[in-house]
Image 1 (cartoon, rainbow, N blue to C red):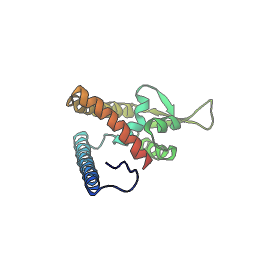
Image 2 (tube, rainbow, N blue to C red):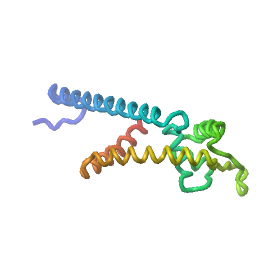
Image 3 (cartoon, one colour):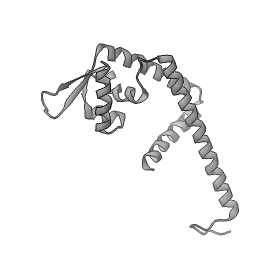
Image 4 (cartoon, rainbow, N blue to C red):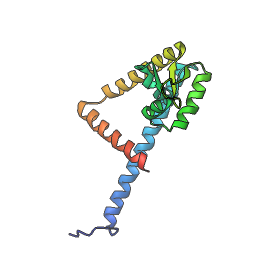
Length: 161
């Protein structure tokens, strides 16, 4: 039995690794396609007035706060501040958010939801949350724990590549 470490591997080990990688890639592709189909169904069911997933995540901090600075919303949504600003520009044009200067920090801009923005965010968040709960309920307790750990690890890996 060889305990060699490094690039030297037997053909059988190489083939097994390659097969494992291929299975992972195919599973990833299958999951990605299923995710895209779910997004398409959501868009079709919600119509034109619904927020996209990135918009929903950006505004989610306003579910429990009346207003937040752009930087905080960007951090919560895990997007760059310039990206958040562009998204908020579009949301402001659509009448979903309002901006105002912060009285205590002249550099900060505070974002709040309009009445229509609150209605659309609450509705979109409710549909998103319900779908995620249904997905979670489809798994056993053990599968849910394993999926949670694996999704967190995959997010970390994806941020690194």
